[in-house]
Image (cartoon, rainbow, N blue to C red; front, top):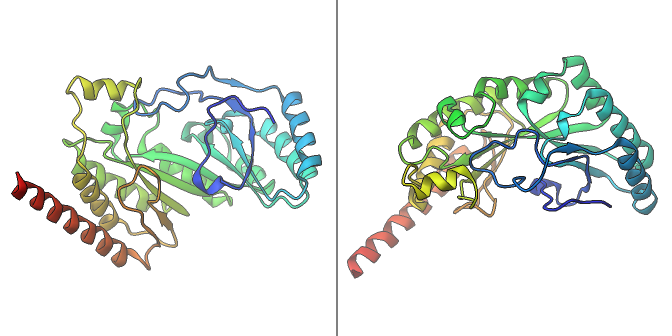
Length: 289
């Protein structure tokens, strides 16, 4: 298998066989992301990928799940993706699901019929970084898509059978826009109603433009307590139906899991309990000064 490091995949794809269809990200402009900064974006030659799939099929023919990397494999044309998906189904007879990172602009270039054809070939889960539902924040971090465009992308994918996993970044609005970030993110997620939702926490990455803004004093990060408070605001604002929720990424201060709407009250209670502990620890520390 050929991999140009670093290689990334969603946590839920831990047991998937990964094929690196593209190298890097075609946008690569997000101010907070350092995942592909050292890569020049390119699409790998189909004959090269074809040979890898054939070889992997002979080694691991019982593979059930595949993930197509890197961060922007959906940039390929529908015909190119169909060729790859057909090869996967031919060489992995037990294949049940193919996953892929999704950029809203690439979804919107494809018709509903094209998306349906991909879903029929078992491309049935896509991972989209919403980051924030606030367009001011999205523009400030160079996301390249609006909240409305990402909502349309999720809705169109899910309408044809591609389940969508949306990710939002706690703390991305800094201290000045924390409340707006939480409120608008909850509203957009409600319109999307993704099958899966993950809340991650913003962590500054050296070498990114947002890291430099922090060093210059132009962006004020949230404290751990403020991140938890922002999480509570988002969860309180969610009115989702059948969405599986996780906040168990390594960046998170509190690991949560549940399903909306069933577990909403419990999730809020767990966040409030963690906030109370955080408040008590802070008060104890202040008394000791």
